[in-house]
Length: 482
Image 1: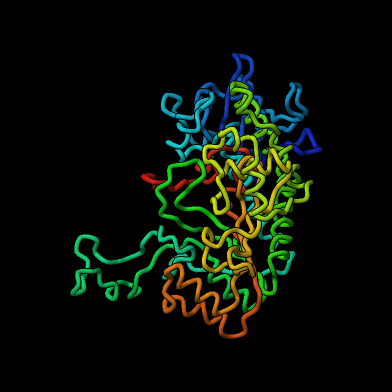
Image 2: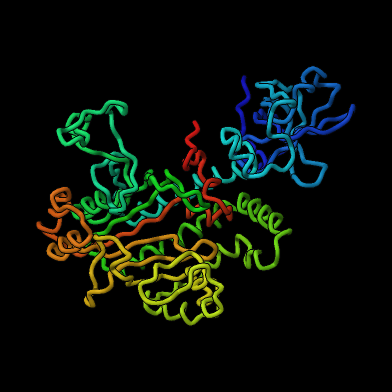
């Protein structure tokens, strides 16, 4: 009878020994001599390898020659207590089958340190490294936690369109979707492109947000969330921007700004605690990698907290709630601003806050996560509810240590006349958004929502410094491999 393959994660937790096992995976390293070979095998189920002990008297030299870093093998053997340090059990091989060879002269992931820049050049192979396999497992864990949280709250998961005719942000940085011939598009008499001959008979784009359509769902079934890909044609070559990324956007009927903040804080704490409770091995590896990476940095560039300390900092602290106006006063009077140490000086009310300002508020001033509220209307989107002062809107951004803003949201403007006035003010045509305005014409209610960039969350929970390293296939200017 064929022995069932057992995942390495299960073998390493096994309380039984001296049992026959069948294990498959990829070789990380092989060392040894003419008397014994030690093979570190990994199948992706855990950050940890299992040691395969191979006796050259039992396994042929021809087979052992092909057991090189990157090769895939199947092993039948006995799971026994390990005599060496570093693992509790190991497998004594009785047979080894080579499933796939990896030429050591050509395989690029040899057992040595590789830079992130090099690994981005071979993104198709980088999931086989410890760091990127940890990222993939943690992306799964965090995705599952997102759905678990909202399901337990009674929210409905809503699929909003990826191809859309609207620009939710009003920023215009969108990828066009068309079937027209790029070299010879049909033209109108005035020389402009005639989109009536396109597939959708109008201009369409990849979505920048599922929010507006999400509002339609919330104003029918109460509470929804979206979790899907979004796209920005923003020519930003930074460590914080991607052209394709994933967004989580809940929208809730009958929620005011306070309710919105309460939910967002609870959500973020839940996700961070889920990582602490369920990703211990991967977090321990990523934390030690980060500590090792920072050894050669100057003191002022080193993190003040370890990765797990940073996660606990969020999970265990109540978020400080402060208005934008008060935050500007704090920043304007801060030492870094007075001594001109901010790259972007804070000169007064109306300043659009940068990451350095957000991090100062979290890490230096309040020493806890911060929710900033009531921003100037001129630096926020048209759909945010106007405050009574006529100058600010009921917006909120949540700021985290290390990265600054992680969540942005608001109470939505439910009053038809004020919403239409804001759209006119910002040059957004009413006729294109008539479907959206209908929700304010018929049975409007106070409602709120927020957006969490999934890759921003992944940067936070993994401790990695570049957003391109927390998504399997990053899409950035000039880069659309695979």
